[in-house]
Image (cartoon, rainbow, N blue to C red; front, top):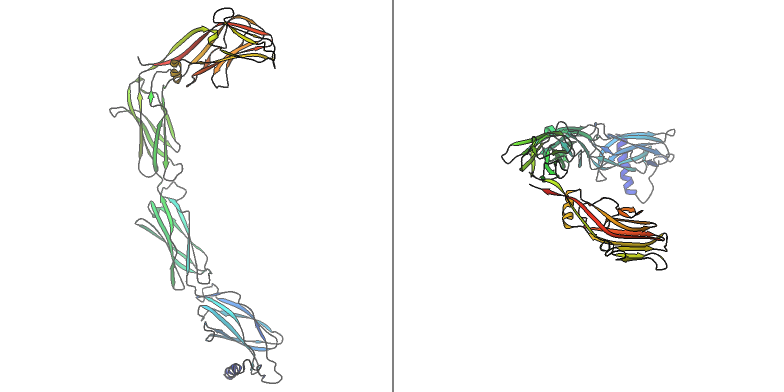
Length: 504
């Protein structure tokens, strides 16, 4: 008690003399110690005894031997909230560690004050801040991974993991206990979480505990007697089901005769799932007549879009009329969804037609270009006979002396029939005279390919058949002569072959 009384007296004297004189020495031979104190090794966190930041360490030093009195001062910088055991610094050990336990301390930014004593004289006190966390959660965080789960037992994403963490006002992790609550519609699932040492805690939420729909997940935790709740995180619980069905056919009308024109129709069925990815489905595709009877069906069990072909027949017989094509598809969960279209079966077959005409040569080749230097290359009309042409090439540039050409329209009936396929043309030239290098041919207007041939003798000359795909309306006919060459042509015979649809 003597030391305490003297200490209070010394402190009082120090206040009175502050700024006017240095503290007095008890004995002339006792120097006044000068202390130093380090910063705390870390933050303390309540409650005491939980193993999480229960102590903090300081280092106290002095320039001479001294006894150091230690107090923890409160938030008002005046009140002593805890007195620690004094430490003795000797000449042999002028530095010593000091451990402060959180027990008995309030939360907040406190001060550790150290006052040196040498004999009965007190030296100048030194201090260092000491922060004590309350251990009460001020922020709770919740992370959810994944945020979408499936109710189907065959899915690889059947549950989500909620990761919960909490900090107090020091922004340091604190121990806690609590719950994670998932709510989807009217269904609630609660899972426990605990963190004895402040590490993030995890809870697993299974889709089997919830129902399909959009919901939320939140965490409520308690630390050192106080409770806080996280923000809610969205959770989607999905059924693995068919969301929509689409059916298409390659032909809306079928002519069951095997002639290559709309003999059958390819039926394609696809679907979208609630998961956005491929799922296994089962179902059936039916061909239904006007009386509601199924005349053809296919069973489905697949994860990929389906396709099948119908030849328009019931068994082996063509029964004309309009049929409904219906697809009904179901996923692992959810309802069966359907889609339909129609296919009309009609009587009809393709028959071949032909148009053949012979025309004067001067109506086919109507223009020419002299490709030489001397203007000696020329084409004449009515040269040997009325309506014929005679082209004579002398000098040339790069081997070609003369080039004749024209454009000729394809008959409307042939153009209309091109959609049935198989349309073609062959032109035959009646050659009366020829000498040297002569070639001619024809092509679809604007096409890169053509039919052409060399003319080696008089008589009939033809490059052969040229196919006419849909929308071919014009032909280009051309004739080329080499150097010192000529040709006479009396007529061209133009032969078209095409198909038409007969319903008789």
